[in-house]
Image 1 (spheres, rainbow, N blue to C red):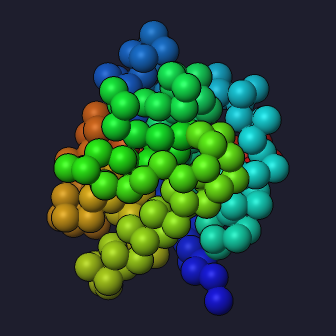
Image 2: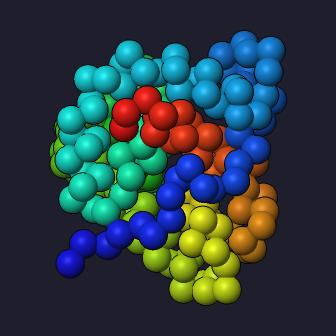
Length: 190
């Protein structure tokens, strides 16, 4: 029986990208508008992965739009990778699986742009969502989902509440940015 996220990505509150993240694209705005602009910038590259994103989402019970949102944030749909590697050789693939032995300690599975890779990364994501559900049973499903997204970036030990899940994430906006990008992909048929 596959895991299933019981929260709708469209119902997750988000402040979107920080000004720091928005500056990557020299955007004059931050917040949800910036996240949407970056998701749109990545849409052309993302389209070539749409089928495997949808298959992976179905297999793991995760909204394909969320997978696309993570791919957009992590690798700009592959645009920032060097032969599939990012984060100075510490992360692999479209969803940037952490292979650093002092970090996530995962191994690189499949080609960087393969369904095998997306399946591994989405399995890691669902693991963290489940950890956050257990850690914060009093939180709403939407807060747990957002916390799981933050934990995908920073680890569940660095998510300390349901409210400010991004306190310890990259740019202090990871989950908020991913959620806003995912909402854009949801509106654009993912």
